[in-house]
Amino acid sequence: MSVHPKTTPAGAKRYVVRWREGDRNRSQAFTRRKDADAYDAEVNRRKQLGPIAVQMLDAGGETLDDYVANSWAVGHTAHLAKPTRALYASLYDKHIGPFLGSVPLRELTSDRIAAWQTQRLAAGAGPEAVRKSHTLLGNVLQRAVESRRIASNPQRLVRKAKAPRREEVRPLAPVTVEAMLAAIRDGVPRSTPAKRHAPKGEHVAISKSPERDATLVAVLAYAGLRPGEALGLTWGHVLDRTLTVNATKTNERRSVRLLAPLASDLASWKLQSEHTAAGDFLFPSPTGGRWRKEQYDSWRSRVFAKAADAVDRPDATPYTARHSFASLLLHEGRSVIYVARQLGHDANLTLSTYGHVIEELDGAPQKDAEAVIRAARGTDVPSQFPRVVSGV
Image 1 (cartoon, rainbow, N blue to C red):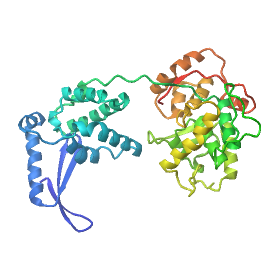
Image 2 (cartoon, rainbow, N blue to C red):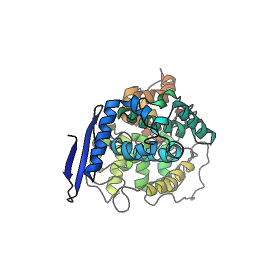
Image 3 (cartoon, helix red, strand yellow):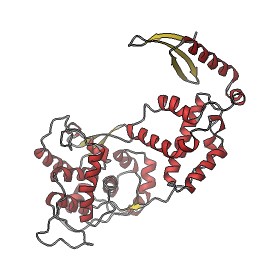
Image 4 (spheres, rainbow, N blue to C red):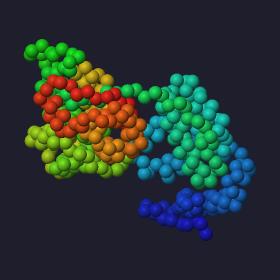
C-alpha cells in the first residue's frame, strides 16, 4: 500500500502517495482519499509501461512550466544559495518560461531548443544570459529524466551559443588602492601619474564613514573577498593570521591569509567602531545589521565609484578589486592551487583567468605582498600588474 493517511499539525486529514523514482523517494499529498488512490494508480501504470511507452501513449501532458513549478523548484533548489536561486528564477522568467513554458515536456525536442536559442539571440538577448539559460534548461530537463517524465535530455544535443569575448580588466595596483583609501579617508583625490594632483585645499565629500569605507575597500583589494563575503564578516572571523570567510557563491567556508597591512587597517577600524563583539559585523549598517542590497548599491556608487574616479580608474568595481589580491599572490610565486583556495574557486578557473600572468612572471623576481603594500603606502611609484580577464 503506497497511500498513507496523515494528520497535519493543524488537525487536517491528508492522504500521502509515496513512491520511488530511480534513487529518490517521492511523495504527493491529497485532501481526498479518492484523488490519492487515482494518483497512486497512475504512478503504478507509468512504472509498468516505462518512460518510452508513456511518452508514446500520452498526448500533450505536463508542460515545462508545470514541472518547474510543481516538482523541480520544490525538490531540486533547496540546496542552492539564495543568490543562485534568484539568478535561476530571473533566467527562467525572462528567457525560458515565456517561450518554452507552455510546451509539454515530451515535445521539447533538440530542434525546438535550438530554435529557441537562435531566436533569443536574434531578439538581442545577451549571449552570456542565453548560455546560462541553456545550462539551466538542461539542469531542469535532466531532473525530468531522472524522475522518468521523459526518456532523454534533448538539451544535451544542442550546442551552446558561442561565449562572448571576456573584457580585460587591470587589477588595482597597491599604489592605486592606497590612493583610493586616501581619497575616502581625507576627501582629497590623490592621483596616479596619469592625472594631476588636485589643487591645494580642494576637497571632495566621498564618505560619511571614511574609516569604515576605506577599510572595506582594503578588505576587497587585499583579501580578495567578494563584496557579499566582506559584508558578511564578523569580528569573530578575524583571527591573528587569517580571515574566516563564509562564501556567498559556493556556500562553503574558507580561510584567507590576513596580510599584515590589512590587519593594521582592521585594528584601526576596530578602535573607532561601536560594534566590536565577536558576533558583530565588521561593516554594519546604521542599525548594526547586515547591509541590504540597496544600501550596498548606494555605497558602490556614492563611495567606491567616486574613489575610483579620483584615481582615474572608473572601470574598477568592488568585485573586480579582488583581482589585486590574486596578482599580489602571483607576484609572490604562489601556486595556482594556493591562489584558487584563497579566492574561493577552482584551479581551472584560476589558470584560465591568470594563466598569461603566470607566464609573464615566469623567471621574474618574486615580490613579497606585504612589502609591496608597505612600499605603496610610502611612495607614488606605481606597481605594474599584467592585464587579466574578468569574471572570476
